[in-house]
Length: 376
Image (cartoon, rainbow, N blue to C red; front, side):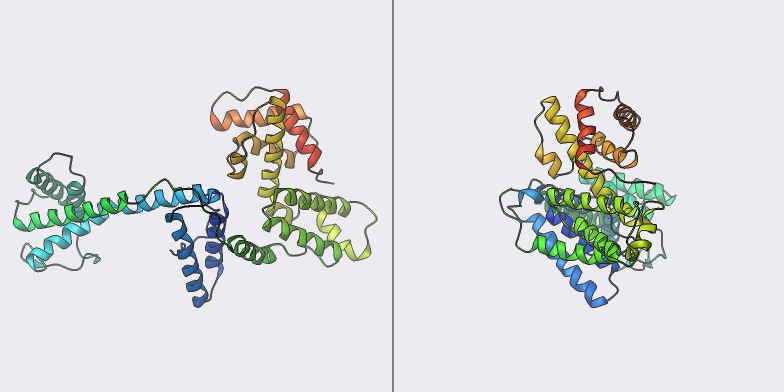
């Protein structure tokens, strides 16, 4: 399966290592210019996607597998009107030797004739109500054909019956294929060896392009190294430690005196937030959201749903807390909470969660664990 050739792929469709690897492979394909390299990535991607349809599926990849199986069924059944129109056209011409109303007809893909009436004819046959006779379906489909073509409905004939029969047979086969796709994966295997290693290799290659030192000097080099590691690692404790060191470097850049070899790097930090840190914002927001969620649950006596954390399905308000803490770290906690709950109400059009000590504990936890970003 090849990625779209003109638009950079979006984020992975689901959590889990296989979804992440799929996303990185699609990015790699999109950025690659070498034809042979594209073919190799395309083959690797096709082999990876087969995992989504083979049971058992690793627990971490269950949502990824479900989404691909659902997508497969939609792809089989979705473009019914277009496919049915083509089947009807081909069935009709096969029965007449390639003519329609006495004239020779071009291939289906040709723009030389109006396809719309055939779409309506085929779609009406494929979507015939249960219990409707074949003659009733044919009459309704011919009426749809004539209405779309702006003419009286064609008279029933063996050629039209052949067209309808072709649609009926092929649509039944398509529905049979779709019914054989098991939508609920069977859980039980482990992530295949090499998956995470390959994911890290691709991420590191992207990170080396994305996170380059802001300036010459040892601090800039260390900062770029930390940013690459943070981008590539999936270990949460390691992410927090790396983020803490990045913030510490940011603090040092804004304090005098600065070593001579780091002057240019320090100047880059004393203007708007460096692009490097902006690129890491989604990771920073997620870490803050997870910290806030844990603190909220502990304070309110609610069990922590680890699967929600793993699958990035925390309630949106915790991510809003994370974003707010990045942009307004010095804000009084009551103001932060009021702003977050106001966003919740505006986005969901529902009453916001009640202000509580658990929410304040969530905000305090983020401030406690994540170092304060330094701004001039």
